[in-house]
Each structure stands twice: as structure tokens, then as C-alpha cells.
Length: 473
Image (cartoon, rainbow, N blue to C red; front, side, top):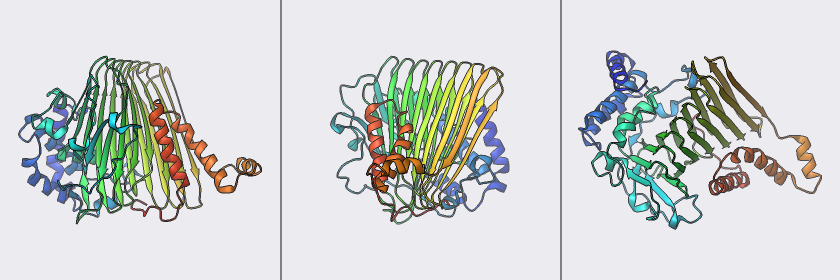
């Protein structure tokens, strides 16, 4: 495996040999702060965790932040992250929160776990007593030896085994990992209600910009079923950065439905990696709604086992000078696996959208069936989309296809609606809503789909004036 102990040791040795030549002023503050922070991080002294953190730091020292010379990052610049010094998020009490953001119709009975600036807040979380077969714990508590109902070996077995240290961003998250969540769903358990994980960023309240590195690990044992909602919300519009890593283990014949909603503040940088390992005959569905942040990047990396299936879908709605990058890399590693991708973008003003979709079929992964489509609506002359589908096939009995389109609203459809007494603005909203709705229809949970649709509708009815100030264009 790319992130096995031996591979990590080899990577660390190579990084140590070349680290002095690859360190730059952009990453030096992170390297310096690591040595100050490491003794106080949760789980310090655990051999496996110390090795994982130091391997992450060595990889980051060797590679730094990815530049646009890296093919996968050619459309997205991280200069905004490099030119600012972001301090680690502290333990400050967040501003008073009158009502926690949620997609649950009745928060009193919902399974909801809350993190503030990357730190788990059990006092803001709720876990109904009637829910059996689910165990959750703050990562810091688990590493410190207070796991509650979560198996103590879960983090050691799975943390860092799904998300590799391939990029500097995952590597730096691994180096500084201190808190987050671990969720365990027992074998054969079908969880009726969604589990909502709310990531709240206080955003610009601190004297200097902050950067947090939360980690989320979900392990769904064989034959289990669960719906996860990952909900990122910014309370302020000042500069801050989030570098999230989500690792999902889908057991044999298990089903995981995963919806991510990103509503960070206007001055935020949001970087996220979602890595999923899908067992034989397992199913993983992921939907992402991108509304917030000045600069965002979502990497989604599923690996499919024999007979597994994966559906990736999403909608990105951009205004002002926002920059949003969705990059997927689906790996078919075994026979008879199926994958589908449907992404829709709506881009206004001078915003910039990026979609990169890669399908890799490994040798021996016969009977692979993979399909990918990305469509974008450009609502202004200054709006921009870069779309790059990619197929890499090393088997001869496969069915793979992809497509990408970009254009304006259809004048004939607009005329048709206006001819029936609908004014221009309402007609535009109806057409855009229908366009985005095709992607939202991919969400299997009706409650979650309704919440996502309401957020998309709210974006459509919000005036464009005063929209995001760009950091990534």
C-alpha cells in the first residue's frame, strides 16, 4: 500500500535527505511550529502516531504546498495560502451561537457532532440514546486514552491508511493532526437518521489568521448502512483557512451516503481531501455543494474493490471572484466495479470554476463500468470554467466514457417562460434551479436532498451585489 509503514519510512528518509533544499519561506513557519507543538499534541508518545506525524512533516518538507507546475494543480494557485502566515487555531471560546447550523428537521433528536475551529465540542453535540450500533468520539479524546464506546484500536488501524501522504496538504494535516472525530458503525447496523458533523469556523475573530487541520474518520463495518452529512459553516468573513482530511472505510456490502455542504466565510480558504476505500460489493455515494469560501479545493479519491459501486455528484454555485476546484480521482482496483459522476456548475461575475475528473482502471479490473459528466452554466462574460476529464485504462474489457459542456442559458427556453408571463429574473432562476436540480437528484436521502435544495434556492434568490472577494484567481 502507498501509505504502509515501510513506504512511510522510505518516504521519510528520502524527504530528510532532500528537505534542506526544498524548504521555502512559505513552509518554514509550519516546520518551526511543529517542533514546538508536537510534545503537547494529543497522543504524543504513541509510537505509531509519532511516526505518522513525523512522516507527514517529512513529506511536507520535501514537497511544500503544491504549485501550478503540478499537473493536478495547474488551474488552482495556493499563493494566498503561502503568502500569509496562519497560526494554529487556539482553544478560545467561540462567539455565542444562538442556533447551530443544521440540516436536520428536528435537531433535538438528531445525531449531530460539532467541531469549532477544528476541535470537537461535546457540549454542543447531541447523540440520541436510542441510536444503537453507532459509536463516536473526539479524536483528541481517543488519542489521549478516553475513547468512550469507540474501539481503542480503531484510530491506529485506520488513521492514515486511506488518505495517503501524496500531497503536501494531506501531509501537513497528518503532521499537525490533533483533533477531529472518529465514527464507528457496527456490522449489520442500518442507521435510520443521518449523522451530521458540523464544522464551525469562527473566521477572522482572532488577531491573526488561523489555520485548522480537522480529521474525520468513518468506519462502516460490513453490511452496515449510514448517511453522513459533513457541514462546513463560517461565522465570520475574515481570513482563515481550513485543511480537512476525511477518511472513509466502507466494509464489504456496506452502504455509505455522504453529503458535504461547504458554506465557509467570504474570506476563507477551504482545502479538503476525502478518501474512501470501498470493500467488495460495497457502495459509496458522495454529493458536494460548494457555496462559500473565496478559494476552495475538494479532492475526492475513492478506491473500489470487487463489485463495488461509487456515485460522485455535486453542484458548485459561484459569484464575485470566488475560485472553486473539484478534483476527483476514482480508482477501479478490482473487477466488476461501477462508478458514476455528475457535476453541475453555475458561475457568475468573474468567478472561476474548475472540474478535473480522473478515472483509473488498474490491470485486472475487468468489467469496469465508469461514466463521468460535468456541465457548467456561465452567467456572465467574465465567468470561467476549466474542465479536464481524464481516462487511464489498463484493462481490455471495460466500458468508460466522459463528457463536459459549458455554455449560457438557453434563449429559447428563456423566451418560452417569458412568453407565459414569467418575468426575466424569475425565468432565469427557474432554469438555473432545474439545471442544478439534476445533480441534487443524485442524493438518495430525501431529508438531506431537501436541505441541499433549499440552500441552492437561497443562493439563487440572493442578489449578486457584495459577493465574495477573491483570493484564488
